[in-house]
Length: 154
Image 1 (tube, rainbow, N blue to C red):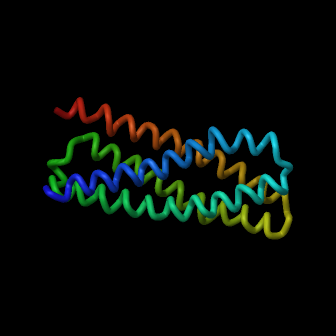
Image 2 (cartoon, helix red, strand yellow):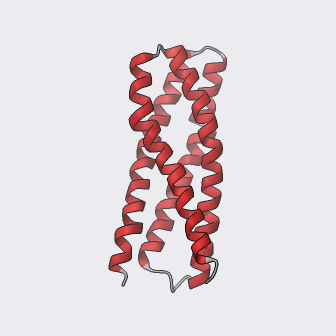
């Protein structure tokens, strides 16, 4: 039980990095970049920004999985409250969406930018935007379950 506060801290920090990063990118950076930058500059910016962000997301995903499963291990699978199981389910869905986003559209974005194939890069970025929107929604729902769910499990 002495590990629980450290596990919780790592878990929350990783969630903040991932969900907060998506919030910033989707609701702050994207609208401004779309207005101020022409496609070549905008697409190159996104390729670079996402490359840096996704490195942090991989670390966040690992921390979320390890800390979350460790906390479940501390209390036991059947001892974990329902909202923990819901968080795990949504988290795994988010991780699968992110893995697809990283290995498919993000790869195509990089290829398009490298080849100055702006239509290809733009199509990939459009797919990324949609998937990030879905993951942001799921992430916010998971945070709601984490915070509100604790009150219903008592």
